[in-house]
Image (cartoon, rainbow, N blue to C red; front, side, top):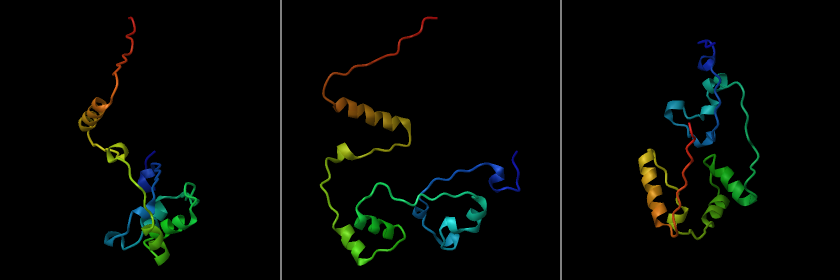
Amino acid sequence: MLTEEKPFGGIQVILVRKFLQLLPDDLDEGMFMFHSPLFQTGISHRFELAEVMHQVNKEFLSALQETRVSKCSDKTMECLCSLSRVIGSLEETTSHIYFKKLPGAVHNREALQKLAGLQFVFEAKKKKQ
């Protein structure tokens, strides 16, 4: 049953986000959204994933943690400036994002036409009625 007395009319809301990426601005009085009174009352159960699982380089992890809160010490700057790697062919490593089906289908068709080898088409068998 929906009610106007509960936040979001009583509808269950699940938010998943890296909230530090939503920078504060003048509209929210310079505070992150998770510090706002509305967030505190509207979102009653909160869970924070605090352990970094995919980064083992301690120096780089420290640099990431600093930059996510808009800080950058000399050590962090040195670490970030030291990063370099050879990037392969952009065509092979670039993701293409389309907001409509047709441009995506056109891109996929063009990519398939560039591939070497025979093309096989598989069709589903029609069921007898």
